[in-house]
Image 1 (tube, rainbow, N blue to C red):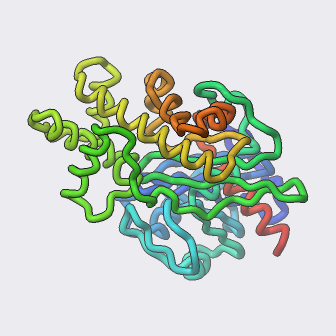
Image 2: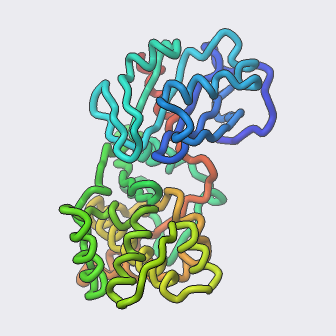
Length: 339
């Protein structure tokens, strides 16, 4: 799938352009798919700027360049959202938006509106990623036709996977694996967990492997090291670490990467993900080479008797700019084909 930087004049779909959206706890990304594999008019809106998803969606559709292409309106759309989608009503975990899918479809004038979990959509994109849209970290070789695993840290921690079907297709898992209980792997992580228990009754993996999780790791390490914690947010923690300004901030980033390795290894053995483990979300791609140098891969393989098993499974960082659009497009196409 390609992202087109210029405005197409006509749609290659009989029903007109299709709306694609990727809604996280911080930003909502919108685009139009004007023909199969051709995406245009990508726009990112801050969720905090809009009272509801419907308001953000209408604001995007009202953009002059979008309205010019949409013509009489958009009939078909698909939204990937950072939340469980188990029925008609969706209430976001990491943001205040809540809505009925059917009411949103009617209000915004869609004939078909698919709403799916964002990591279900991201998982659906994995078979379509090119070599240029992913970066391998560590060794291992993917087995064709084997299950794929997916994790991603951002506002929260997303987890999913793809299971191959007999007909050559794939089934994306509707997982909420980011909410499994956090599993420490050494005394320092035990101390971090003990500190986190002072703030949360249940410490999930997401509590630590997310943006706010990096801030929690920072506070916990400050407490563990007996130093005063500054009032700094995750962008500053990461900046100081990457710029070499603060040894403690670098330890925070290293601890985060190793913890993520534990989660990735757990997913690898749970799914038997011989096709590879993929890492998405907003945090890891921003760490760049620092992530590659971290203890992530060593921790990933640190599974005792199953160390060699995991050593054969490759891990990839997704570098595509908007991979969820690829997956949600495939989901919408399947929905329309079966309608």
